[in-house]
Length: 101
Image (cartoon, rainbow, N blue to C red; front, side, top):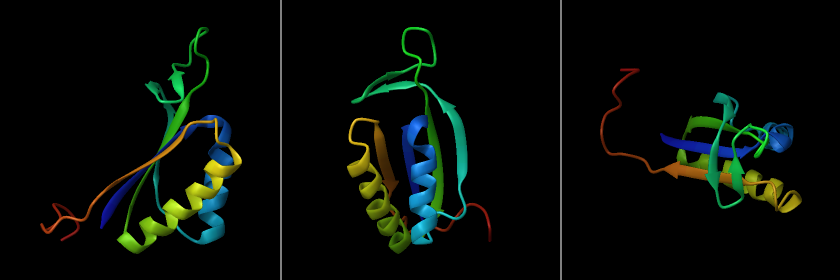
């Protein structure tokens, strides 16, 4: 299992979820709806100066599914190159999981 995190501007949330749904991946996720921070696309603070906000999807999946998620997200990024869409993945570990034994 790997952990995939998608951090993106709220304006593309529907597009990201649709891309995942259309490819049949990322069916099970945790969504953090309001995320503030500063990335390469600029500040997203949800305040009067920097009003935009991001969301985060955390997905645990097999590595093969992670690659499909990466491809689906790349297509969304092509459509919206200036919206701040990032994908991060943590590689598989050789250790036993702490839960679900």
